[in-house]
Length: 302
Ligand code: BEZ
Ligand code: FE
Image (cartoon, rainbow, N blue to C red; front, side, top):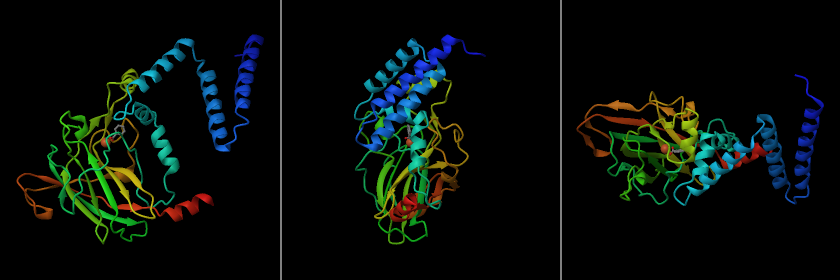
């Protein structure tokens, strides 16, 4: 289609406006802040021009962001959820992940972590009454050469078999979460329950966005891990249940092939850490490899 003279003039004015806004940030003392703001303006303007944003759409967007702020508080962060469903969280995690290809891959943090979870020893119970089939979880925390990271701090949290985290119940329970430590050989082990798939919170603007776009709010079943050891990058990740639903349509794009693991079904009887099970139970082996802070920083400055 050939542009009319009027259209050419319109585009020229649009481009000139973008240039003026970019120039308004040219004297920003911090080069990084300048880069961030000018990049934002460039992409936002390009987006509005590209889709020919209408006044009504601009107003809807302002209302949507306003409601996203209004529903957020110290317990609920709807902006993070928005970043998650737009894939921005996973993109940022990928950009900042350690470059060591042998390190366990990170994924989204999510809104359900609670600090100061109960501290348990090897063989302890992270379920603390959470509903679900018993699941023994064990593994080793090492560096990427396989050397044990003795004393590594491990935090785990997960939804119960009904798909709810403890903090989603109104009775202030603590269940399905714990802190533990790797032993001298890097080994850890605890009892919990087999996790279930669940929907992300859908009663706010993000739920409205997913409904309007016919997108599933579901996350595949997973256990969250946060693992830290001195001199190593802190890892925030999950382990996903192989063969479970929603591995290929996770609402927050958090699934990575390397994080999918077999939960092996076990018959009733004697289990690890002195426990006897009357019904079937599950076993997961999940080894964690942390990237060294030094090597990774060296790689990035090359
Ligand atoms: C979660 O896995 O807990 C989660 C992650 C992102 C958004 C909502 C929930
Ligand atoms: Fe989760």
